[in-house]
Length: 320
Image (cartoon, rainbow, N blue to C red; front, top):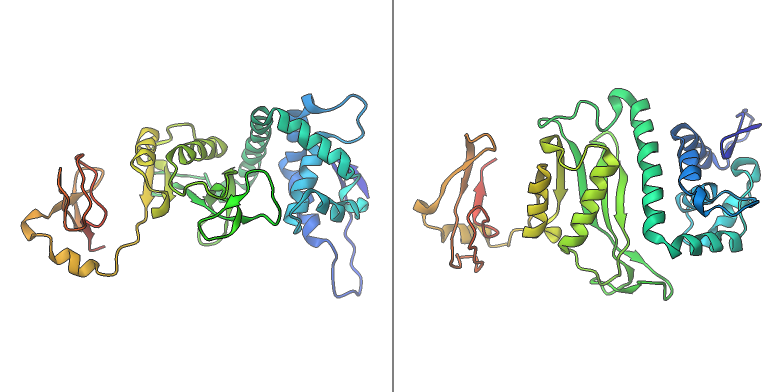
């Protein structure tokens, strides 16, 4: 065994044992090594390093990420990593970790930006190593990089900061996340996440704007990447403000809606002469699709729409 970077480099041998302990942990440490995430975090967080300190802030943050991936859900679960020094190297004590988190929290915005820069650099290195298999390889309007934006619920088992009742009658947090899709053959990777109270709204436009901006930055595609990026949001996150933000970013976007159970009956209430052909972004007629718009008055769905180009939910139809 020899050490390069923040973690020991192991030589794997075989034995007549039907199990391999910490195999997942080895994969994670080797991923950190290949991406250079430990080195980037060490450099980014150097201003928070104490003189003559034994433990590097970047290594501590990596260790915390490892503990979460291995099943931990609080700082004290770092003990699982600390128990394997041969695999994870020296691991800071709970008081040392707590002091660092408090120190970073004193200037949370600056610390988050520093960590974000380190993640972005490491991500770019991994995508470069992946070559044609990288999510951004050969992206175009026809084959875009897909970013999914959605909120989730995280249960808190004690009265943690920002924990609050959730809309599903639980208690905890309601973070908003952005994932870069890897297609049918993979899962995806976290691009950005915003920690929010449990009672935060699902369709808060300001939060969506912040997360979308951060995700585009992490993907390294620029602030206005055009149609080579597709942002997908479900109906819960839809607002006119969020759509306006996506238009400003010039990205393609897809928004889902849950239609009412009586949609076929509601369609019958729309006069046939109201329907007009739907058009593609190139100005051509979209085959099998029509649109009906009601301006300044409520349509049969009881939803008013006063701006051209913004249809009331449910008053468009598509045969594709």
